[in-house]
Image (cartoon, rainbow, N blue to C red; front, side, top):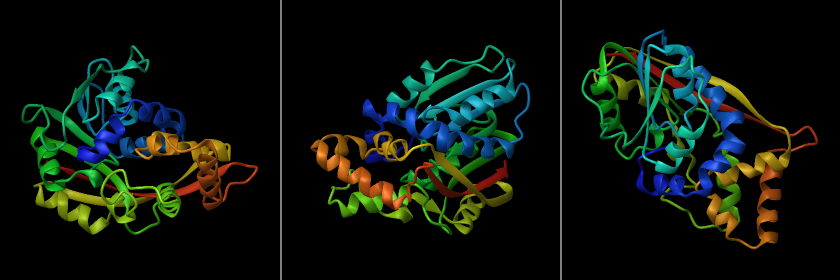
Length: 273
């Protein structure tokens, strides 16, 4: 997921990837992966790097677009996430996906290796965003596109805002610094524009995109906690305390008999090397 020490250690815990897969991958991150890929222009035979790949929603769509003649590398700091991603079945018509454990600030790849470098909802967590952007540019070929998404600083934090508020109000300790600070999860249009231009990219553009994420039941929506670094903290509480926290989160998410719908906003930035 990320190369911030505290956060990456949280995602590396065995229980986190399973919860992420069951309760957030299809509902939240696969739709956002499709938005990122729609702007990346990946074609047959392309070589693609997906940074902070997690369970690989971006990498898998890239592999489909690149086809059997292409190459996809999914990099992440979390060995647990990569192991579960690699265990997911792949279509024989896709490009092969390689799984690479490394931080975004030190990508284990040669200069000028990829036709596209992608990063979905990872940049906001990197302790050195400029170093990560520089590394992504380094491994991109001349003329390659770099496309990334972050939660938008100009909008509410979607799912994670109510989660952070709920856990802070319950008195839980932060599992890593600024875990309950919404600004630590978001990046503005202006900051993304400046970051990519400073990294040496040209033709930089940033779009703000809105998507609604949906969970069929309140139980499924509140179970997203199990796919976050907060999950082990919640699981360590007595059962009645866990139920109280999840009920409080359901109220914040305006859960109803029809389930839960959460509006999410991302800034998607892209530029050319």
